[in-house]
Image (cartoon, rainbow, N blue to C red):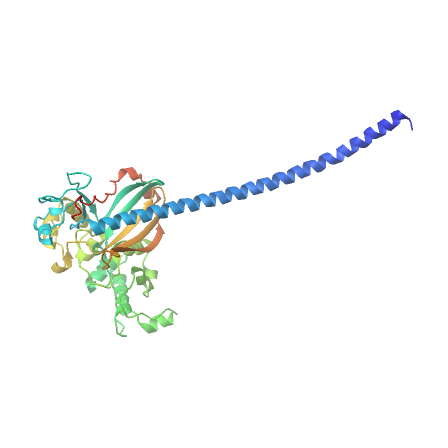
Amino acid sequence: MREDETAQLYAETAAGERGFVLPFLMVALAGMALITMATLRQYMTLSDLTAAAQSEFRSELDAANIEARLAFSMTSEPYGQRGIKIGAPRVSVFQEVGGGGADFTLPDTGSRRFASNNAPRQEMLFLDGTEYSHRAPSGGYRVAAQDLAGLVNMNSLAPDQLVRFIAASGVGEIDARRLAAAYTDFTDDDDREGFGGAEQFDYQSRNLPAPPNYRLLTRSGAFSILGWPDTLSSAGKEFIFENGWADLRAHQFNINTAPAGSLAALYNVDRDAAQSAITERRIAPFSSLADISRRIGATVEGEVFVAHTFPSRGVRVRINRANETLTRESVIYISDGGADRPFYVKLNRRFHRNDRQEADRPVAELAPLPRPSRLFADGER
């Protein structure tokens, strides 16, 4: 074969090989690109999950710090009739109730002085569900503290109060009486079925656990009562959760920290009168039911000695991160453990708010959460 023919044959062979290698190379590159894209997508998903986990962790850490801050205030600052008096000296109960609006009265402190400033700073941390803002490194929060004594203790209601409380959730009078009868049969210690109520046989016929014939241990226990979960709407159930509580101790009701729904249900007043009472007690705390009636211009019905005027040893805390609907709810209790365990926190539930517009409300509109005051420089408190 001549030299020029050999060169031509080599060139044609090389061109054919290049024509075969190029598609193969393109397929290989495409495969590598798909693997790279899949790896990046998985990494991005993992990164998103990691970011979400970090955000949730920061929220939990911030919530724990807020709870600790409130617990410190509860155990170190004096109580007033409407809440915790940040920076105020301790006074006797007689002095506290003697002046009507004595929440901010500052008697002579003598040699006592604050470590940070000689001029005492006084603020009221209201325990009536008032929302405060709190700024943390990870963002803003809305914080509300509610004295448990301001809520309706479902274990301490008289029959007519129970009917009013259930009716306030949005059901009619007949249904309210039926559910109240079922409640009585659920918690009483006998097996006699009341009119419209339900006892052990009724529960067994529906494959439900028999009634405990004991007081409620939690407010959610009310939704194990026959008829309650089926009759109450979503808004009605939320009303029970918002205004009700289940305490085995028969504590007195605090008229100075009760939300409007609790006041209306317990004292047989309409919501406008209840809201007027809340407005009035911001000016000065109430000393009695007669004081409420006089100041709001409406008759308030109830037992005189049940209307207590001081918060209890438990506070429900709700914490919302700005622009999120998830609410963390816990309860801070002042314990009997003394300095070894002055308080404990019980995590109750997490739930989403239905009102997204409310969740989007800027935190800056709210007053900042009061900080606990410094200890006195001489160690005296």
